Length: 297
Image (cartoon, rainbow, N blue to C red; front, side, top):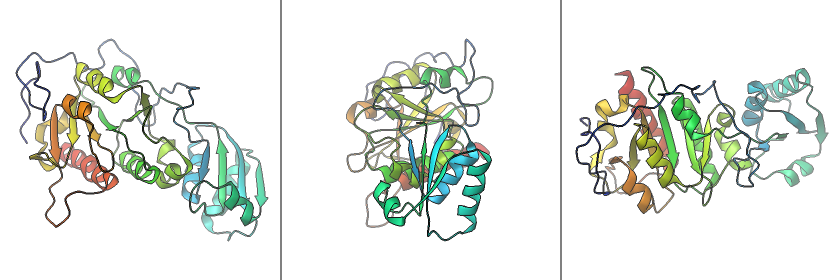
């Protein structure tokens, strides 16, 4: 896909654009980039904050302790759990960090669990901290181009966790979530993410359409994924080498109308079989790694 024309006035549909001056690039005015490994977190006491206080599953708990970015208050381990290498490592990490460990029955683990398969281990930690979108945008300096993902109304925690895992693996700088009408980091999402929540920068915004406008004003190209689009995601071309934000739609309805209208470009994943679409987490994996591939080539 060739690079789209410069943005100015827009007709608001399908990413159609008319010419106009480019906007100010992010990062002017300084700041510290909200980048994976260099987060600028901000605590939010709102009851719709990110969550993440209860972490279940061996891999997710292991990464919680390895990352050591938030205090772990207590660790529950089933007393009849098979002492496999991961459980042994979790216990060693907990001892080294002076995390209280309580051995309980499998029944108590199952009663406390809020995911389907806690694998005999549950951790209780401080909630995840949010990062302001302004901080992420202010931190983009020089030739280091932002790679963002926005999630529009995904309500299935398993899907959210799988999306976050793909984003962390692809090196996404920040994930943007709407505060309302969307799932945040529940125990099921944390387990599905397999530890990715400990390393990702995440922003919770009041409304995604307004956040997208903020991205556009900061010179970030906003690319929405929609099954009905004519342009394939595999032709991003030069656009992938700019500041870019991929927008993923909810399960079923896809992108909401206002979000779709505010995207600069709408692309689709070509479907060659009988089915018309992919699960949103599978689409996230393909789209994020397409940006990675385009940037490397």
